[in-house]
Amino acid sequence: MTNEQFTGLIRQYEKLVFTVCHQLVRDYHEAQNLAQDTFLSAYRNIDRCPPESYRPWLCRIAANKAKDFLKSAYNQRVVMEGEEILEAIPADGPPDELAIEQEGAKRIETIIRTLKEPYRNVSILFFLEQKTVEEIARRLDRPPKTVQTQLYRAKRILQQKIREEEPR
Image (tube, rainbow, N blue to C red):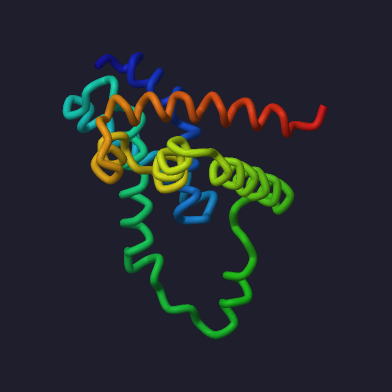
């Protein structure tokens, strides 16, 4: 893969990777760092992943980076007396933007959970639990191609429902 192609890959998936990291660590700046680490790891190991699997592969790397961070000694440091006040102030960016982002995420989660089967379980596993198509297929005992089709249809239904809820 050329540098230009990898730059295109970054542009295509940077928001997704950041969102995965941010959803897990809940720290805006740390999520940015983890997203950069994700793409660095991806660049080093890009030959291990087939092109059609870049999206779930990058999500898995991002989730693993975030989980490693959460387990790290840095994140589990002891809070000194008086520091808990500073810890209570969110460092995730402007409070208004954070509130809007959280409200949007809750709304989308609600829409996902109201989907009818077979789309609900597949969507929950894919969008909320960040499972790969292969993991979902194994868990639900369905062929991967069936899971891909159900995800495709679920995305179309979700897009429609979100459009219907948008204020005009």
